[in-house]
Image (cartoon, rainbow over all chains, first blue to last red; front, side, top):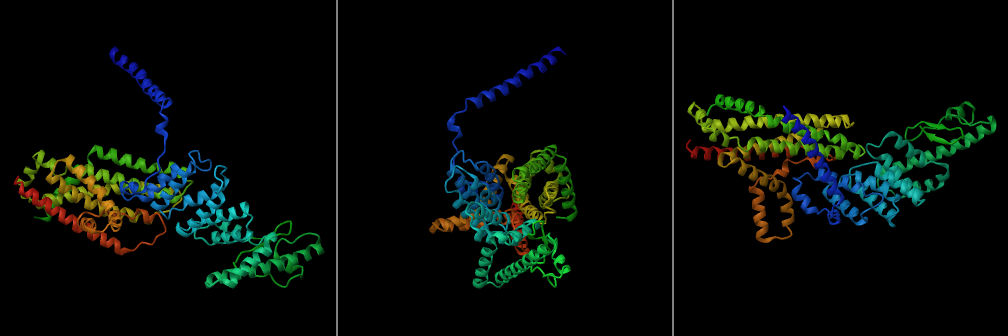
Amino acid sequence: MASAAIKKIIIIPIFAAVVASQYAYDRSKLEALQIQFPAPLQLIRVFDLGLHSAAASLLWIETIVQLPFFQRGTEPFFNNFRTINDLDPKFSFPYAFTVLVLPTSRAYPDKIAAAIEIGKRGIAEADPDWRIPFYLAAVHLLELKDHENAVKYFDIASQTVGAPHYIKRFSSTFVLAKTFREQTREFWRAVYENAEDEQIKDRAGAYLERLEIFDLLDKASGAYFERFGSYPKTPQDLVGAGIISEVPQDPFGFELVFNDAGDLSVQ
Amino acid sequence: MTVHNVFVITKNTFKETIRDRILYGLVAFGALFILLDLFLAKLSLGDMVMIKSFGLAGVYLIGTIITVFLGASIIYREVEKRTLYFVLSKPASYGDVILGKFFGLYGAAILTVLLMAAVYLGVVLYQGGGFDARGFVAILYQLLEAGFFVALLTFLSAISTPLTSTIAAALILFSGHFMSTAVENVKRIGGFTKTFIDAAYYLLPNLEKFNVRNVVVHHVPLSLEPFILSAAYAAFYAAVLLYFAYAFLKRKEL
């Protein structure tokens, strides 16, 4: 009885010794052990039993934490990124995440060019993923003030299979913002005139038509304001006031509404 | 050889296998491993490719370990314990024993894989991925590979000890998945090496044809033809291995 109790008591300091020795080991760990080697692609291919996608995911978990500070330098990150792409070229998440986060890094001077290059490659090679063109559009808009490319990638994002409705709506609204409307019109006109693909031509034509509708409704909304001292809430109000004869149909089937400042958007 | 004898041995082998307590431990570990996907889902910000590829990898790895664990001694144990003498003294042939053992073990392997697949499908459903029908196709391919592997282990356990069988099975597992890559790489070398690797590619088991896990996690279309061809490959290869198991067992003249 007593010996059993002693055994139970003894086990506690032994277990404490295990924890203490682990703690002591961590404190005195050799620096050399922390050196990271790039993951050799062929070796992974031999030993992953054909589970390339899972191996790429596992490597991405290790790689994702390096963004955006690059504590180990940029080379290990880009080496791992290449290995991930080679193991599973259709794995879209690394592309999307890198395009989103890389531009915020202070540790990499060529971050914008690299993010754009990665984003373009992602759109071409990976699974259709609206996040890649959407974030790429944001990079063009926010970092480069390149409205033309921003419009182009927002449009790609809105057309990507699986894009949520709010992304489609945002993209549609963005390309029609008053501030950029003339640039947007020029862009879509160039696409319309140069497109060889009928689908692209139709889509550019629809955007041009929508811009015409927006111009018309903006003008009518100004007239409504002059008459009533407030902006209309819907295009139907303009018909009710006799300013326009009928509500124009949006070529993409969205409903058009005005906000309090009289700006149009799609709902 | 009678269907009745095969059925009785199959039933007994299946019962004996699923009574193994270590099997429960492994299945529980497998389920836990797949449930870790829930943790991974947080790390991957809900990215379905990562959740699915890890889940399917878990089902495959644990399923293969279980198959090797159960199959490495399936015939050897019967010979060592002398229970095979008892079975053969009844009106049962060597062929009945080999087929009965094969189907019993394959049934247990299918059951364990389907149990883990259910956990996997539940995890994907819980994460908002809906019913992963494409993932289930990958599981069906895995079951074809399991059939081949059970036949291989039946053969290996008829000719060697469990440890040797386990090591040989592990080597065949690695080479079976590497063979396609080796054939691609050796094209650049050419000559005798290429001829040798090409011959090995056709003679040794090629397990990559059962691997659609990298495809089903992406939006790549699937077709029925590769599945039928893979099923035929597994069936023919298993038949060859079971025949050799039968021939070796018969030569022992128990």
